[in-house]
Every structure is written in C-alpha cells, then in structure tokens.
Length: 277
Length: 140
Image (cartoon, rainbow over all chains, first blue to last red; front, top):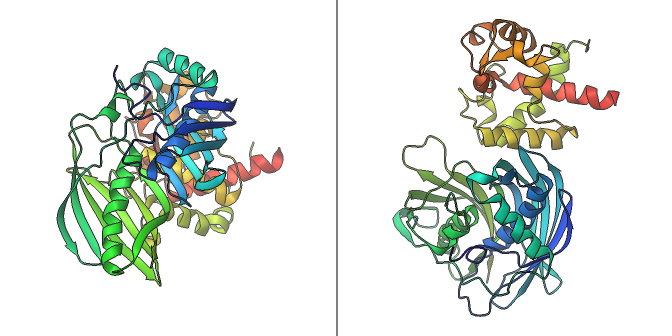
C-alpha cells in the first residue's frame, strides 16, 4: 500500500528495546518536508511506546490515543533534524498502557511526555498484526529506509466566529483522503489525535496573538489531553479555543473539538502559551 | 473475609476521590454527588474510567487492576453463576446489591447486562475501590 510505514510513521530505527518496559528509537525528519508540526514530536514518542506495548502483548492489541496528562514542548523540530526518542512503560496489559517519554534533538530535550494512558484495542481491527510484527523486525534490525516521510498537509481551519483576544471557533473539514490515512490506520483510517491537537493549538495561537499583539505565541505545555472518539475521513469538526487565564506573557487556553450530534467533545485539552517579544 | 468498609473509612478519603473524579471528568466538584452514576449522571465514558483509575492510583499511591470492581463483586461466585450470555444472574444481582451497597438498590435490577455494570458505579464505589486497594497493598 503506498505510504505504508512512510506517510505517518515516525520511528526509523529502534536501538534499545525491552517489550513493555522501555525503548529508544530515532527518526530523521527529511530535509525537504515543509511542515513538521511540533505535535509530531509527541506522535513519534507515542509510536515508539506503541511498538513496545504491542510487542509485549504479542500484537493482540494496540494502543490508540487516549489521555496525555502533560506534554511539555522545549524546542522546535526542523526539517533535517534527527529526532531521538525514549520511552518508559509504567504498566501494560490487554486493556491499557501507560508510559512516559522524551524526545531529543542534538542531545537537547525538545519534548517531555508525562503520564500518557492509552486504551488497548484489538490490533487486527486497525492493521495486519503479522505485517506489523515484520516491520518491527526491520526497525530492530538495520532500520527502515530513511526519509520515507513526505510531510503532512496543513489542515485548513474555516473561521466560524470569534471574540477578538478571547475565543475563536473554526470548522475543520477532515479530508476524505490523505496520505497519512494509509498509516493511521490501514484497516481503519482515522484522524491522528496529534494532528487534531495541532489544529486546536493553531486556532488558540491566533487568539493568543490577538490578546498580545506584537509578540510571537508558542505553545509550551499541553495538559489533560483527552481523546474520546475516533474521527473518520471526511468528518466535520467544530474546534473551539478559549483563553482562560493570562498572566504576563503566559496564557492558558481551553481547547475543544466537537462532532455534530455527539454529547461529549471528541477531544479536548488545556494549552499553555508563552509570548516572546 | 475482608473487614467491612465503614462510612468513616469512606469519609476519610472521599474529598480527594470526588476532586479526582471532577478533574478526570472535567466537571464541577459540586456535580459529583455520592450516589450519582458516573456514566448516567456525569456523562463518563470508558476513557474517563481509564483516566480516573490512573489518577486515583497516582493520588493514593496504590495499584488498581482493571476490571477490579466487577471481579471483587463476583468474589468466589463462579463466573457461570454470576452471569450467563452477558446477562447478570439473580445470584449475581444479589452479589452486586451487597457489594455495591452504596448504589440505590432499585438501580440494580434484572435484566442487567454485564456490560452495563459500570453504569452503576458512583463516586463512593471508587472511594471503596481505593480503600480495598490500600488494604491489599498494606497486607502484601
């Protein structure tokens, strides 16, 4: 399948591996990709944890995005960077995995992932377990061919309404087809939670920029990420970002994504922004 | 036979449990009533239970195995006597009424699907879960 283990795979090589305990891996961001959102640092770290968890559970189940209690962004990934990821699994069984993770670039920590809790679902519903087992062998051996990743599209947000410097709503029309669906996942394509979080933080960054004109807003911390439902290709979501508190140049926004007809949000989080002058 | 969990035991930790539930569900603390069903009254979903159990483990420094409430409720009753074809038996319902004494008895009524047992869980159910985990950990 075109794009398989390339379009949305952020582990090229696994250099240290204890199933269900710990792992280290790496991913080279191709020099020619234009857009590599910071949320993909969390994706890369989470994917390494997923390999460790799936191997421990013999590929019966796989983790999907659930809860990430705290994600701290300490640096910005750039095309050409070599990303080194490291995870430690706290617990793992057929129902749930919890783990911590770190991503580094050039030896400097660029991401800390604290207390991630992912539900484990039947692996065969999402992918071919044997094919996954085979690709893990590749990662553990010489590694996959470098620079397979061709980038992800910037998903456009259609403004609905806003209160300047206070909140904004926008519509996200999830594409019916996109290369990343080939990897996420072959048997059940769904919008990656990390791309949804990128859309939400982009929306919030716009509100922060209005509240602090002249500064550059960047997300420092995302807390209490919770993804409750899968979002299918072609779905429409309403995104909302509301500034809750502002203290000097640190601002906290509540992020929420809703699908029509669903009682609870599809996903939500709190994001802390810092504004550089 | 495990020592009974008294109201005093529950009261001692209830405040922290209720706050943890409010944090996990993203609701106000005063919405968390002792006998409110977390699913039916507070809109909790399965991901919220995973989150909640994780937060309780952190808050109380205990380990809570998944599925622990139903497992403990069943106790020594063989699974085939507790449920048949996904429906809780009369004996199972009697067990649940004793074990989940904090849940108003009229909510535990036949026919009850095993998949619907979590709908019964209240804030106090989780307080008792923590107390049992603390006791098991203390006894280990």
